[in-house]
Length: 479
Image (cartoon, rainbow, N blue to C red; front, side):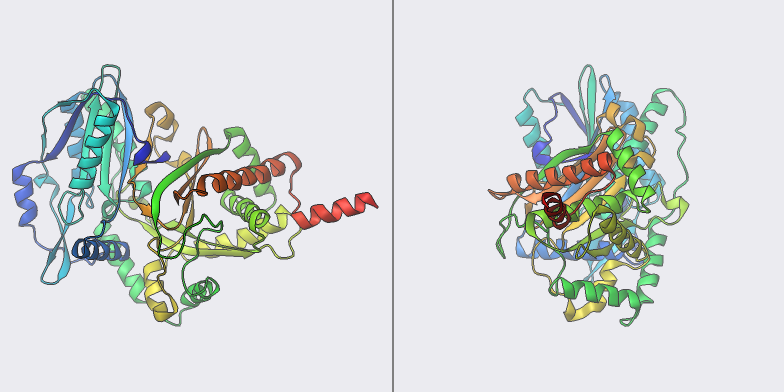
């Protein structure tokens, strides 16, 4: 699932068809009763941000999207049924939000109330014309307070067609996008064969929200997990960590964002690296963090590596295939001071990753809430993060290349950077969403090349000496 910016999403033109809810479904949404379950922490922050943006005239929350291909011209009847089935199955897609009585209220329609209607076919002959149309549709139709907060459709062509889905983040996370590709493909193909799709049962996102809130509210300000966050934030200067390479962003300044993509390792290289780090007692994510930290040290001299990593909260089996925002975050920090080689840094990274994973049951936003004035927001992007996902474990992953599956991020402004590392069957990919400053592209090229150099040396030699050790070895060799 290669992540790209919408700026780079320029599919070939064709006949575009979209589906929207029919009038009866829209009316049912307007009169739906309020759900008794609370919002998740992520939903609460997201929707509060959307309200502030609407009231102040600022840009709203960005949408997220996915696109994939199907063979031949699209069978519009079958695809419409697949979209309908997808919405009916997932509680979060049937759910919406409204601002009423000075509070955010959530409602959920019953599955039987969902019906879609097909829009007219529109012909596009030019790539840029189609790009502009999709940009307007996604930006103008995806609003968390206007249900449904998504756009679904297809670009039909004689040989291959492109299905697209864009939705507000409140309805799903990146993992959900990958699941949507598989489920829509499986459902569409089953309908073409006049069969029922073989899909697993899914759990309730609202029940998950209720459980998350209960867990969060049970945490007191003196809980050891809060102290971990407090010490981490203090080490970052009272705020969240920033990207470790200075890309030339001044305080209070934001730049148009870009996504820097690179194939970091081939499938064989990724397998070899994983084998080596596991033999050394580490894991893939810890190994990659260690390589990143060494690259940062070589470029900047920094001895301390700090970031935040997202963690999924799909702890129950029935939530594994569900659409929803099942994410919390945890701090990652370790020092390179005194380390002689990659193996020693790996051990430190491994310990930090284990600590972060142990925080998966603590909602990050509740932790920040309990920090009070010890935490200050200093920039538009709340924090810089590093994410690692092994997509090979997800259903349908073997066919991502065949389906040309991609995730799409809205083009916004950025004042910090986020890193996604994705393990796929064609290798290990790295993507950096970053502010597009005049120096960013060159610095990111240098950073990624240094990471690759560390990884390559570890794969070939089994380890990597840190700069001080290289210098000492050279002195010994020189006598």
